[in-house]
Image 1 (cartoon, each protein chain N blue to C red):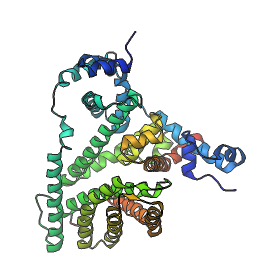
Image 2 (cartoon, helix red, strand yellow):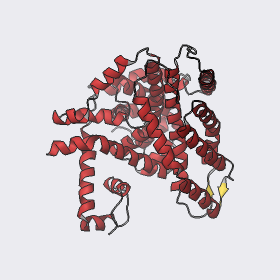
Image 3 (cartoon, rainbow over the protein chains, first blue to last red):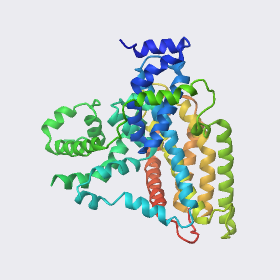
Image 4 (cartoon, each protein chain N blue to C red):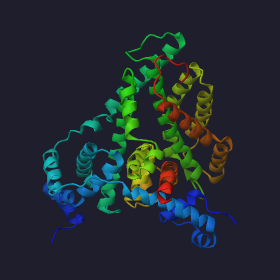
Length: 192
Length: 247
């Protein structure tokens, strides 16, 4: 029988770094899914998986067992993702701005994210989902991913984001509002 | 009959407790239809595809990770957030703002550090947008705080203090560039941030309610949202070939 998360953590704390492998094997796929939803990019998600486990290993003594290890790990992953998205956003903006004409990139983004009408009529709603998620602010996206895909409660989301529950709730709500504005026409057309 | 708000519908959809929601939804066709419509959109998000990882993925992650477990060195992007980097970044931001102001004041179109006026303007748009979002989070936390009795706002105080200096620089930049709308909202925001930063860490319920009501009465949150939304729209506009005049 495989050791539980708690048993593996006890071994790691006792100095057995190899015991961390159990936790990596148990949680790496779900951390990848979370990271991919956050970043929308496979390579970034892979890097985030590494960063998340590395941080978890280094902070393992801080894990107090109040939440499940998976939930604690998701908090770390969400924070790593948030850091990366903010950094990427800044770099991307600067890159776009430093680009002399900036026209090529704008055109490329436009061609990747066609308007809602065209998408809806071609019945490719799925292609709208990732861009819709990417348009949310980093905070809104994190809150939404944790609530919608990971099923975290508002209190845990607040803790993961370092904000009070009211602000976490507000971020989820704003995210849903924006997604509705973007997707509702296509979803409605898809039904008719 | 008082209908459920959009926020209540979202919370109900996600299984959070909303008093009286179940009974209301059974009796109200309008709210029931709204919930159905919301559910369709949110269920569509389940179609977001995540690339499958192949067999042996876990072992691959471990093999990459294991050699680094003993290393004290942070990963590449963590370094961007180290205190040393943050100080350097703050210095760079200050230089950029100074360059922006200098460029505006002198009205010269020459490039500063290789960046055109339009480029500087767009960097400012992004920076101000992020600043507004961070400020908004503090105010939302205060407005939504439903604690009865004394309230500890030490965390919000610290964050407000951190934002005041930044706010002042952005306000001056907006003022210099003649963007009255942005500078006026930043001016109001600065007063609110100062008030929060200078309040005692622990407030009795009356003092806290006073701050909360002032934030709501001034409508600062709404103004921040409007300005933030305008800035985001302006970020989307491709940079013109020549310098523009406003923030």
